[in-house]
Image (cartoon, rainbow, N blue to C red; front, top):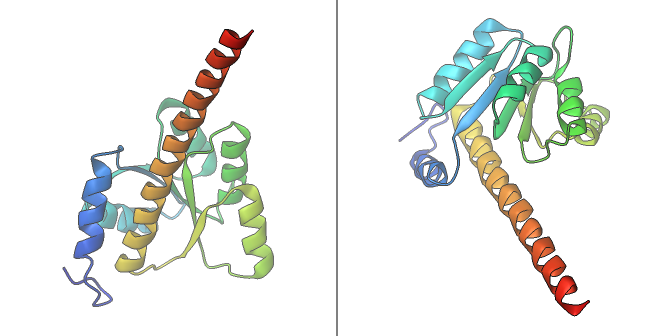
Length: 169
């Protein structure tokens, strides 16, 4: 399946279907630009993703209180609460599994460092090609699944260690 860049995105789509069997393919898209939200949402929904939209960071946090979202695509520059502030608040609440992709045209080293320190996982430049969008979303869901698996494994290991310690005492 050729995309807007001429690259065959069929393998990416097939891998996303395999990931779909492991986790809910839900994405929250946060952007104050309604046209940008609509364009990205249409592209993602056409690939089988469930997309929830919010027009600012505060609305996104409110939605995240009610539903878990594996992947968050957020615009950096928004009124009221930027994508960076949204990420900081999300991480401060202890939500470490959600994969955050920042949508931006900013690319200075200082901006990238600021984002990574806030807890941003990846960046996409606005007006992103479909093949790149799908590749990054694929990586996001894969990483989300690995984070969840790691958290569960750590909990099981802690429980086993506790049980062994109880037996020894």
